[in-house]
Image (cartoon, rainbow, N blue to C red; front, side, top):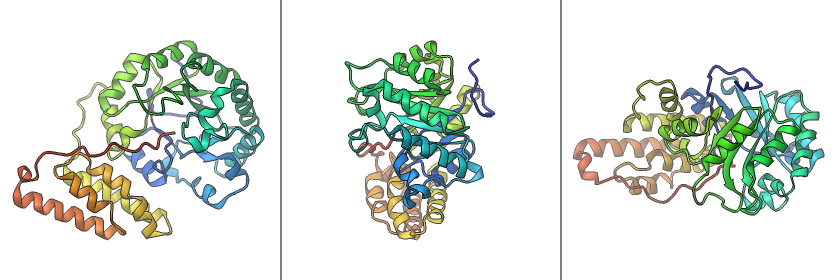
Length: 346
């Protein structure tokens, strides 16, 4: 069995993916509570860390209930990446440092960061070696299958990462130019699993607990990293664990319980951010995800996307539940899926 370089209780660990603007400390804590075995920070700029930028450093904060946790950094300058790794190790001491070679966002790749590094595998190796030299922590990385279809070669990329010192590798089997279109090619995860001596995590197109189970069975991955599938349903981790353990899957929370989780999450977010109004505005996206698919959800989302305080959220939820009880669920019509989720996965 391929061993992870840090202590884990689960044989097949479930990871919360690093996602910009989503996998902040409150959501990481919530997902840990709902069964995520490992969490990873939002991706953070090596330059911002080495310069001790206040906004960047604030996103490195985490509590003991978030462990085991990895800090994900990105950049194409090997020296900056090494310095950032040293700073993170000395000041924050997470369980591991993860290198982002997967982010497809234009403002990141235009400086060869994220998946932009995949155009030059020598650069990928140089960055990994620089990070490894500057930390005593395990170094892991997240990659895509290549920059574009012409350069699509996940096995070669993964082998180069392993040779440079990566101890766990996550593959999102799409190219950078695909962004989030088309389907993730899970067979590429299988190929990388077969080629590497280190644990490989599968990532991509996991929307339900059954998707996660199917990925594990089809690819033989050592663990599963869940990204957008956790939006508005952090209990996906507990439900996936049930399936992996061969147990009946615990039920999806009722509307009342879903609202209670959303409010708990909102309170944690409000306590975490010094600007409470700003925290409420930033939290609107989570509220939309929590109510997605509920009866009359379009109107509910419209109201929630205009809130400026936690108190407003409590009132809106209370009114929805009261109306639902008064008129009956059939009066609300069918659930509405609404607009597609805006991805934040990196």
